[in-house]
Image (cartoon, rainbow, N blue to C red; front, side, top):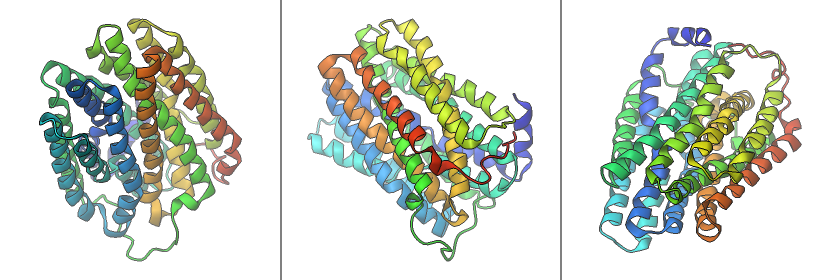
Length: 400
C-alpha cells in the first residue's frame, strides 16, 4: 500500500506544506470534543455543551466559503495570518468566559467568533496538491493521502484532548489545539512558493454551490456531518454512562482508525470503477457498517463496532473531493472545497445539538439511532441524485 505514496513528495515544497497543514488542522478533531468536555465539566449540562459546539460549527460553516473566496482572490499567504490571530484570541476568550462562570451568552458569542475565524486548512492543502498535480494520476493518491492525514488527526486528536481535559485540567486540550493551529497556520502561510496562484480577475462568475453536482455533494456531506457531530457527543455520554468518561477519546479514535486504514488501502488501488460508482458504494457501506452501534452496550464491543463502521469514511471523502476538483473551475477551487467543509460543519452542528438533546432525554445508547438515521439519509440522497455526478472523465480509471 505504501508504494504509490512515495512519489508524492518529489514535488518542490510538498513536505513543508503537508507538515504545516497537519498541525494547522489539528483543531478539527480536538475543538468540538474539547468544548464539550470543558463546558459539560464546568456546567454539568451536555445540552449547553452541545449547543455551544453547534454554534461554533455553524459559524465556521457560514464563514468557510467566504474565507475560501478571499483565499482564491488574495492568496493563502495574505489571508491566513489575520484569521489565525483572531481565532486564537477568541478561543482564549471562550475558555476565560467558561472559567469565570460568565453568563451563557458569552459562551455563544465567543464560540461564534471561534467558528467564524476557523480556516479550512485541509481545503488549502488540497488546493496546493491540485495546483501541483493537476491532470496527473498522482492527484488521486494525494487526495487519498490527505484523507489518511485527516484520519490520523481524528485518531490522535480526540484521545489527546480527552486525556488532557480529564487528566490535566479542562482547559488543557483546547489550549494545545489552539497552539497547534497557530503554529501550523502561520507556517503554511509562509510557504508561498507552493500556494496556488492568486486569481487577479475571476474568470467564472457565481459560486460553486450553484453547480448541481456540488449542491448534491453538499447535501450528502450535511447528513454525514450530522453523523460525525452526534457520534462525538453521544460517545462522550456513552463512556460516562459506562463509568469510563476518559475512554471517549479512544472510542472516537477507533472510529477514525477504521477510516485511516481504509484510506491507505483505497488510495493505493488502481480503480476501474468510476468516481460516481465508488462514491455511492461507499455511502451504502457506511450506512450498513454504522447499524450495529445503536444496539451495543459494552465499551469494548463499541470500540470494535466503531472501528469497522469507520471503514467507509475515507473512501467517501476521497471520492467527494476528487469529484469536486473535476467539477469546479480552478479559479474557484478553494471556495469549492470549502463548500464541502461547510456542509460537514453544518451537519456536525446539527448532530451535536440533536445528540445533546437526545442524550438527555432517551439516553446515550438510544441516541445513537439518530446517527444511523443520518447515515441512511446520506445514502438515499447520494444514490438518488447520483446522475448529477456523471462526468465525462469520471469513468476513466483513477490511478494511484
